[in-house]
Image: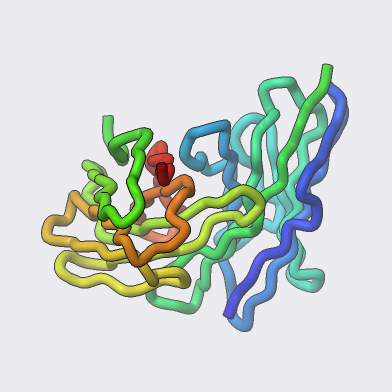
Length: 115
Length: 111
């Protein structure tokens, strides 16, 4: 069985500061990893994904994440945040060896960007 | 534009009543999913379907039912057996391994 742990439930930062949202996963097989963003009362939007290849993945809105297999981590980073980045962020893992590609989500990290 | 449409956006249910949440996609995706979202709990899988006329239970299927009679549609019924149905419900579809496409959700409240 696979699982995802988002280490911080809330992360407050000031505008233009860097931010890192932490995600660790556990799985017995190879995995695909995703970060999604959710604005209030909306669905989830894909920020970026790791399927294979380069461990540094770049996504939309200036976000990037690094896959670290030895530490089973997939932390999300942005060098300078904006007020508009305030949202909830979800890390998710999919079983790359399975046939149904179910996504297992972490519990989310609420990023609040203050002026 | 292709996408997933969930309706209604807000739904109110009386005690003991069954309600059905609609999910329609025009992306021609094979697989569809229903997730439940509660504050601080992330998303939990209710049911999923890989092909028409076939579906499987997820992690929290009790008190819910689904059907998949058409590729485009995957409605979710919240039955009276679901004792705590108040939540945000998200439908998603997937064609390949490249992540899911989500609808905008239905917020269900018991009154």
